[in-house]
Amino acid sequence: MQQPDFDDPFEPVTSLFATTASSSGSDFPGQRSGMSEPMSTGEDMSRSQEEHFLNLFWQSYHITIPILNEKEFREYYNSLWTNAFSPFEAKRKPSALVDSILALCVQYGTTFVINDKANADIEGDNMSFAGRGLHRRSQKLLSSEYEAPTISTLQCLIYSALYLSNASMLDIGHRTLAVAIGIAHALALHHEAIDNSSAAQSSLRRRIWWTLFLLDSKACLELGRPYLIDASDMTCDLPSGDLSEATDSGSSLSLAFADINWLAFHTQCIKLIVTVRSIHTGFYEKCSEASAAYKRTDLYDNFDLLESCADHLLRSMKGLQDWVRNVPIALKNSRKGTGEPFSTARSAIEFDPYVPLWLQRQRLLLELLYHNLTMSLHRPFIRFPSSSIAAFQKSMDHGVSCLSHAIITTSILHQVLNEGDSLNGWQQAYQSQWDAALSILGFGLAHPVCPHSPSARRAIHTAIANFDTLAANNCSIATSAGAVMRSLLDKIDRFASGFRDKVTQSEHSSPSFQSGPPPRKSPVNSPPVPQHLQASPRNQALQLAPSQIPYSWVQDRPATSDSTSMSSQSLGSLNNLSAPAASDPTDFSLDMFGTLGETALLPYQDLGPSDFEMWSNWGQAAQEHNHASKTFWNKDGR
Image (cartoon, rainbow, N blue to C red):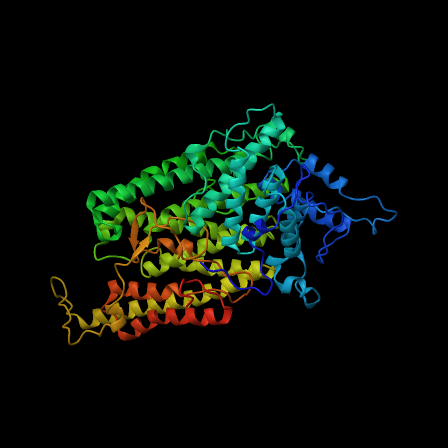
């Protein structure tokens, strides 16, 4: 996947290896190059301004990515400010760690700025890129750390990867994460510490390593890539998340609430991703074994093969049910009526006004993560219907389950965005909605006329409303997403309408009491199939990718020996459709639907020429969007 072109692009992490400096043994990055004055980047802020953004950090990213000792960081931050007669004359010493955290906080906090002309010059009126000067400066300071990295080097890289992912720079963010994982291996974080480290230091090492494991697993599921971390080469214990660990973290948050503390969320996220990754890996292995047994490479061409894989996945989902049962009650959102937490029952969440903000956010983010990952496991079985629906009953059940998780995700976000402020400014809210919307659209394309179609249609309208709300809260990328959803919904409606018209015409033209199947239309009277559809690459392999997301059709996914190909008949890889890049509100490609349109026609070849024309127009829409955004998502740059 190619990244959008920017007038002032981010500097790739790999280029930072070109310049290094001698080390002085500092425990924190950015102070080994002998610099004594802050770099001039136009991002210098007063201490009060910096502390304003840092205060946002402790209630946002720190409670979800707990890789920092708050007490030690505050002491370190205070030591960076030189003595001066006036606070306006004080200058902070350069620090890559502080700059990387500030960049993330500015990116998050700028979404709260009123979107008017007075603030239109903030990073080109694109809030996702706010703070990129700080981010760039932190990377330059960090370049001297790679020869002798420390724990703080890892912290900087993790925050940098988060910043880039929030800015839709997924490839660069993943490469940054790869650098961090390499350094973590060099520091032996994947093994338990064997030195005389204190309990607090050992706990911090574990949380950093498992955070890398969590981010790597999520990114690879989203992008359809092999995992960078080999789970079989790990001896690092899971973070306990108990009260003693919370006490050692130096946090100013309340240490405990009910039966949990603020670190319990992180521990539960790790357990969830471990479970999902195990199911995902086992599913791939089953597909490979089944394909070898049947001597087939396309799961969708064999009923028994596809149903065998669907049955295996169904039995594997028990691991997720066990995880749900073991989640502490204090981390579960109560539902109104008889709805259960983490269920797909469409009952509203019952908010507790006495719960602290950090716990409200953790509850919501944990449930959204659960639905997102579960949805990604079911999604490969969203497929265009065959002539024998009964033969694919288990596969169809997985598709319906994917739709159910997508609908409840959309419903939760709609309630949260309209009734509270817990997720305002959170990029994960947009990412969860985008991924859910793609799943709903995929189901609507595959099943335009079925009992679940009305629910899917209503959910698409709700998703559009959510994108509008996010756009009103300065999430500029949501503006493009809403426009895309409206365009695709209109095309789904047109196709469903054409389908109903054909059914009505067939009823009027067929004998009322004819027994047996209706006669086949003669070739002379049948609508001609366009030449380009006759040569449609129906059997062209598309690698199975039951992953999240959001994000892009994986053009550069490496082939692996145990990977199983799936026909382009499947919509399972809709999760890999890239979200519109944040650099341009119109930046989005629909080119994939040119291929989907051709494939979708195969089960409906008795439809009229107008239906063929409608599906073929998806490719034209892609060209228009690509021309407007100058973004290329295909290898050949179409």
